[in-house]
Image 1 (cartoon, helix red, strand yellow):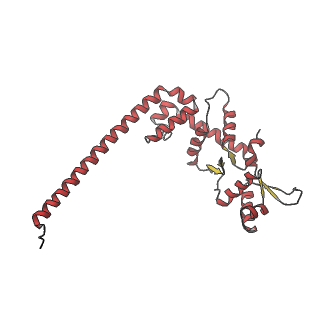
Image 2 (tube, rainbow, N blue to C red):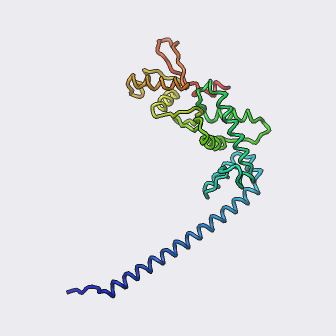
Image 3 (cartoon, rainbow, N blue to C red):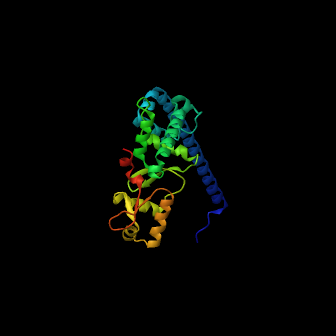
Length: 247
């Protein structure tokens, strides 16, 4: 008959387990300390890099976007504070504040045309026009970052993806799945839909199609056209033709 391991064996096993635990804790502390030192080194190097290439970061939109990516990889947000070290070193606080104001002005100026939904490339072109030829050039990445900062102020600013196109929304409210689907179908047909086309292509009931179209009309994103040759009421979306409308 096999004998048990006894009290001494249990005590030794518990002692061994505790030793393994202590060794594991030491390894974790050592690894965490090494990681913190490495991150601190990365941040110091990043600060030195930013100081050396300050002019390039301000003047080159592509280089600036790459710099933001480098910062994000080590958990640094140069836009976190207008009074922080990064704002003072690079002037990011003033740069994105001014860009945010120009974005708001451009969106408000075109709201009557597009209902508060503007293609990102169109907004970029409008803002660059407002900034003039002597200002630092900006990219879509800059516009998106500025809009993310505007979101905290409310007012409905945000980024919306419809199909394969990125839009900037500047009015309160959300595009739910039904509204997004209507805009996708309108994109495919040249900027308009009808209640009948939604029933056919989206397999919706007449009530569902009518409710969604009415909501889009109320929000100012759609316009009614009763002049079609076949008498079918069409719903046009100026925001989908904003490039031509603003040319």
